[in-house]
Length: 516
Picture 1 (cartoon, rainbow, N blue to C red):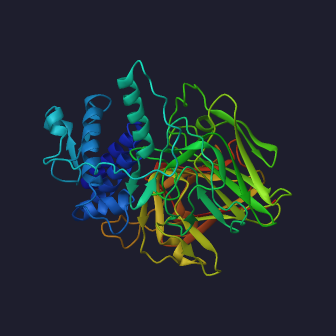
Picture 2 (cartoon, one colour):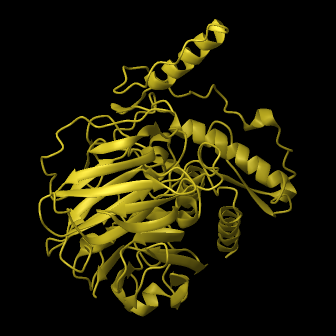
Picture 3 (spheres, rainbow, N blue to C red):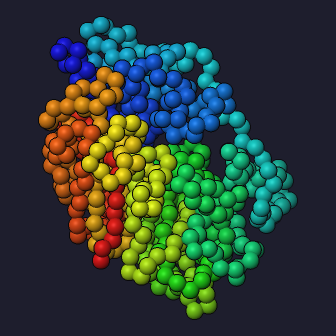
């Protein structure tokens, strides 16, 4: 009983840290700390290895090589420093403090009565040197601006300006074989490819990206930037962590300025997804607010659009969905981005064939790879999510149509931001209690009320004090909860928030389908 009480205190301390806001702009640190603590709680401290942290907590692929990628060591260094700062301020009076000792990754839960030594900057450092990413490589550019004018009076200054401009146009970020080319601020770009051959029925493109096509973990192919006129290509710093990307390795670029796309399409009905990420909250070129118009075939679709206000935070993916769109009479879809109080921008777009009046259903399974169910329907790997932690579940679940949907779980305090077009939707949430009462080593027995949480949709409670096991008739049994007549908020989102009350909230799969 004493051990159980101690475990509850340790979990409470982890929850306090995660809710404190110290990781507000550092999701990697939140995932790192959650992962190592959960392994500790499950009695799996021996599995807290550099490779496991990289793959299971930080989203690296199975071919992760710790000799070439120092992400775990770098993030461990940052985490130790952030925890030390927290316990020197807001958490100074906490009865239990969480430490990540130097030279290891497993957490230590230390009672304050043990008179912890006051941390110093030297104690925040790794025991050995922290490896840094390889320096950026320089490759030839695709487009260059006009050369700067020479200055007769100040030749040295002209030389410096010329070198600066040349450096900006030559810089290429090389990562995983992907070449991202940022250009000088005064560059106006025009695409010189074949502008008449229709694109495929499902077309995905990364704005401002000029490398080989990229295939994400969903199996979707993203083409380099094309069909554009105007604006400039901009590469986002690789150090920025963007929340909500469909793939953490997706090249992070944008097209910025006043520009347009003229996309040749076959006749038909489509839905278009516009991707935006505001990585510079202060705007560009001195703008306090980045707001702009988006026109489609001459009709305004987004008016005074402010990416930061729409997303609610910088470095967060915001998607706007337009349904029942198609080519104009000339066989092309014309998308204009026009300045109105700030520089327009675009990170990417999708054009997907769809049926008239409805967008495609959104089906998500809490796993790292997509799943095809018994009816041949595709369920995307976990996406559009913020917070929580993803974990595999091997417990066999009964009373379900497809067990594949229950082999993964997201747990914690988290939310999904599902981008949709105006309409009414049916939401189905898939649950199974596969921790309490399961065969997982050291898992506690199932009892009513062991896990309680609330679920909100766009701020309205749809489930209160929800107990999965009690509602399903016991552990390891599936249960579905369906909600009708849901509408998106003003930002074009259906936001599903899972808020823990006792132990963590969790979900196995999510299905959202437009019904009218």
